[in-house]
Image: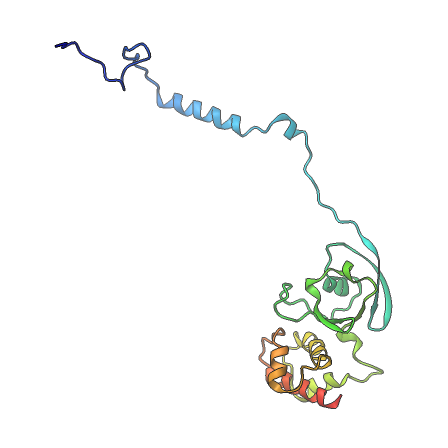
Length: 212
């Protein structure tokens, strides 16, 4: 029986003998680690020579629109919404910017007779379109019948949502969805009134639909 001491495999070196003891200080470990991290943080030389990309949007135009019966031409940023073009380029601030996410209906206008949320569409997509905003409803100093109905039935309070409510109401009537209060509520559900003037809004649209 061989009683010679055998070195465990885990402790043996490549040649079968125990490796020499190595002593490394904590300072040495930290220095080595810091050096590796600093090397990994240096970008390649070719990456340093590439300038950052700058996103720029050139103007698109002339964009031709018929707004409230008047022909207009304007230059727009290709990223500009129709809402911002109306408010900032044409000065038609009656159309309100509420949530700017299509959730409140304050920016509702009529485009080619259809109601749309102007904050969710690009101005550059509507070249040649006929657009109607709240400013175009008054004729010869007289309010539109739906505007009058909103006043008579107290369909507004703070007034911020009112332009969008009225333009959406016009679309609701034109679409034939104003046959009953329940139908009006359903087809006007995309327009939010934070003041809670819904009974007056529904009554005003029903009244105006009956006059037309």
